[in-house]
Image (cartoon, rainbow, N blue to C red; front, top):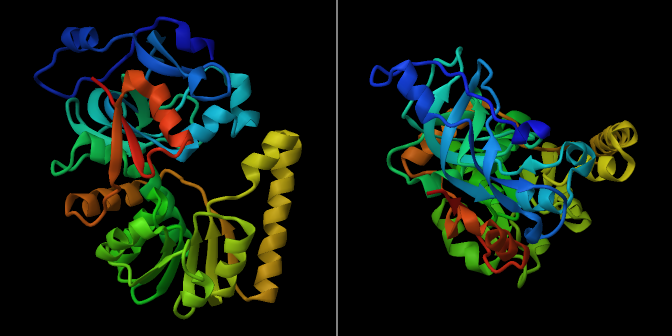
Length: 367
């Protein structure tokens, strides 16, 4: 990743009559501040550098001036070494997946956006140049126009979590109006997004969560919210379900989720074993091993319970992002933000998440 430290210009396409080529090129710097991860470890390894290079834009890419990014569990796990089989040879890298900001420049083939527009979106989990930077680069299909009704802070908390939920519910389970969905762990960002997406479709939703989340979840439209800490949720949950989204993904929640499914239903967990196995054994061994384990489980549960078993991950989905924008704009999809930090306090933000000092979403604001 030596390209992070080289100085280069950023080629841009001019789409706004208020800018001429000379002015726009001067307004887009060849380098910017960014949070670098030089090695894996605790929050103290994160470094804020002032002059990190901006790579050249590809034709389908957009340069975004960052206003806010959320701190996802994936960010803190990557910092600690999750995905090292992929990322370690590329260090130093910039972490971060969510973003809300303004379009600063466009690749030559980008036509759906214009310079100056406020946008929000998210990178794929395997992206090696993340969003913890004054200027971030995303593909056109990873961004959409930010609703005027929500702030950059609130917008930055939505896309990665909501796209993860969308992938499971709409692309894998293909949920439909009138179906029943169980969300295991509805208090987190992905679980809460899944509840709202399913309610918007017309599904009947039940969830497990912490007691402090129950009122918020019921207000979002869930029909049942069970406190996992004080109730026997396996006995308390009503009926059987067409789909189960398990955001916790431990042995016990997998067992309960599968046993609460109707025949023909879909069990989806966010805790697939691909990354852990490739980190342990390397890509050459870990990837085929994880594929074999997934296939074995799919066959096992198809014959023993008549259900479909899946590991789910976030994927870029332009249709999903447009629907997420629409629901956010009308107030039907929100991810509450509990605390914000300035970008220069990124270590404190990660430390607060590591120590569970902030139960909900944390956002970094950029000046």
